[in-house]
Amino acid sequence: MSRPTTEPKDVISPDSEPTQNKEQKQEKVERIWHDRTFQCAIGIPIVLFLALVWYVSHGDNLTLAGMDGGSAALALFGDRFKWPLAVLALAFPFGAWAIADKRNRDTQEALKRQSLALEKQERALQHQLTVFEAQEEKRIQDLYYAKAKYSVDMLCHYVEQMPNGHYFSEGSLTLLFENLFGKPNVRGLWPLSANEVA
Image (cartoon, rainbow, N blue to C red; front, side, top):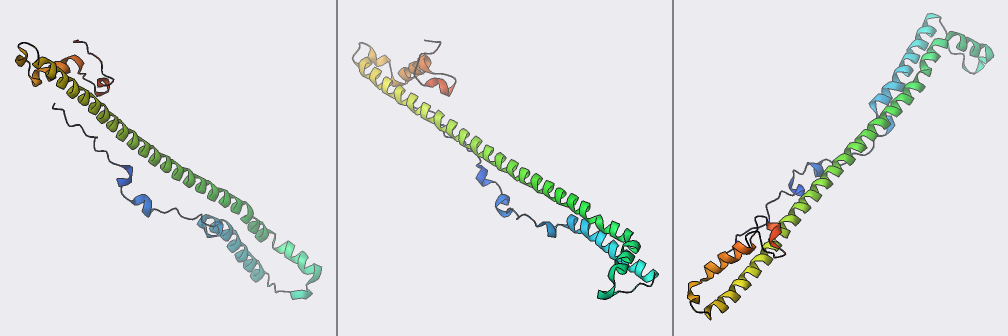
């Protein structure tokens, strides 16, 4: 008995995509000291502090007192370098902001990688589902046509023993079987049941 050759549809596997995911290895978390934003956040106040200290020291002809400065040197330092120290203190809030920004960027990168992993997993599951559906359709067709061949063979055996049985050929019995049990949808072929024509 002839049957259409239905094979599982060609499905492009997610593994056949360009190997960019393999080439794009996960980069290690960058240390905060190597982050450019953090370096600028604390570096600029320090540079401004040193520049202001040099400017005040040069303008007021101040010299380093060494170990013999005492409380007078500390009082002079606090009086003359209030603004440079205030600029230097900006490194703390700027540094905290840079750390928070670095953590935020790391979190966004982690979420992006997780989203890409979930999308890849979803494509893999969709691929497996498509393959399973194609295999299930092929299994149903195998069962249906095996039953059809068996039924036609049995009918041919009985028809040959009937008067005028030679009028019924194998092709006509096959056509009769398909008219009685054929379905437009592959999933409806099995379990075997009569259609609306029957």
